[in-house]
Image (tube, rainbow, N blue to C red; front, top):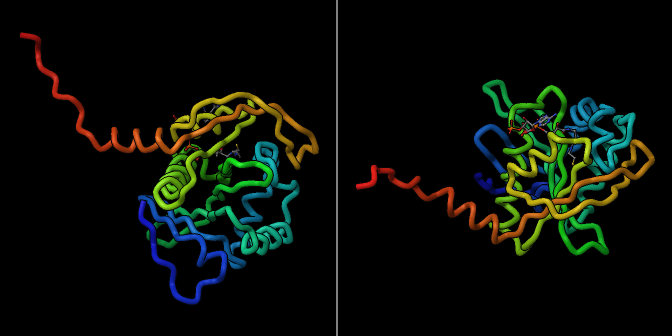
Length: 209
Ligand SMILES: CC(C)(COP(=O)(O)OP(=O)(O)OC[C@H]1O[C@@H](n2cnc3c(N)ncnc32)[C@H](O)[C@@H]1OP(=O)(O)O)[C@@H](O)C(=O)NCCC(=O)NCCS
C-alpha cells in the first residue's frame, strides 16, 4: 500500500483522508463528481440488504447527501475505491471505518458494485484500509460484521485476518428490520504478527538424516 500526499488546497474531507494506492486500486475521499457513479452502483437491492445504512432505491440525491456529509464526519474515514486501468480509473465501490458513539470500537464497512464482484477487490481494498489504520493511527482494535446469510462478506473478513467474536443483531435500513449478524474483530497485535510473518521466508525443507 502506498500513501499518496494530498495536493495543497484539497477539500476538507480529502485533506483529512490520505489517498491510498494498491496494485489495482486507488482509494480516496468521495467527491461530488462521483455521485452519478456511486448512485449507479449503489442502487442495487442485493447490496442494500447486506449493508446497514444504504437506502433502496438509492437515488442521485442520496449519493449527493452521502458525499456532502462525509466532509463533516470525524473519527471516521470513508473511501471511494477505483479500479485502475490504462483508460483511467473506474469507480467500483466504497469502504472505510468509523466509530459511532457511544461505541468505543471502530467498525469497518464496505460494498463493491456487482459488476466487480469475485475479483478480490473488497479484500485488496480492506487490507489497504487496515494497513493504514494500524500503521498511521492509534486505533488498536477494529470490528466488522456480516449477515449470517452473507458468506462472501464473511470470507472477506477472514481473508483480512478478522476473528469471529460472537453474534448479534444489526438494523438494515433497506429492510426496515434487524437481522442476525456474525461479529468479528482484528487486534493491532494480530495484524502486526501476520505482517511480520508475511515478510519472513518459508522454511528450507531437507530430508531427515
Ligand atoms: C461481499 C462483497 C463485499 C465481496 O466483494 P468481492 O470484491 O467480490 O470480494 P473478494 O473477491 O475480495 O472476496 C470474496 C470471497 O468470498 C467468496 N465467496 C463469494 N461468494 C461466496 C459464497 N456464496 N459462499 C462462500 N464464499 C463465497 C469468494 O470465493 C472469495 O473468497 P476466495 O478469495 O477465498 O475465493 C460484495 O459481494 C458486496 O459488496 N456485497 C454486497 C454488500 C456487502 O455484503 N457488504 C458487506 C457488508 S458486511
